[in-house]
Length: 110
Image (cartoon, rainbow, N blue to C red; front, side, top):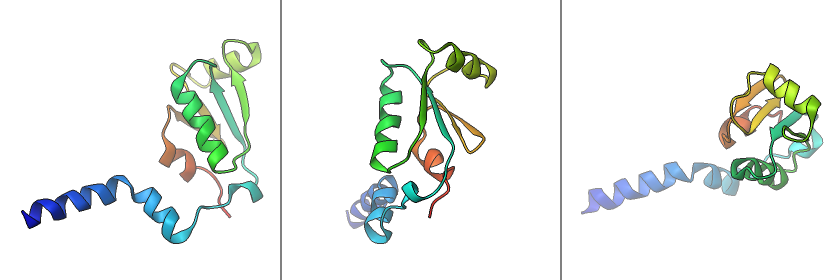
């Protein structure tokens, strides 16, 4: 039984490592560093909304193109090989989908 509880604690810690890291070391401040962040998204996409919330929670400034309303945004989205949303371009690196750890790792932190 003790092994099961210990294993459950390990799994819980692994799944919440980013929250634990922020609690111990504090959240990185992305607002004071220049990052080129472009979000290609749609208004109705749930993962696009989660990406916006991630940016808001971390004070990350970004430019957004709604690929259904912006011809320029749609063309760039296609040029980057977009097949799904959200599609992000962060400091020249293309990220496909909502991948919070990869998104934050691609940013220049202070």
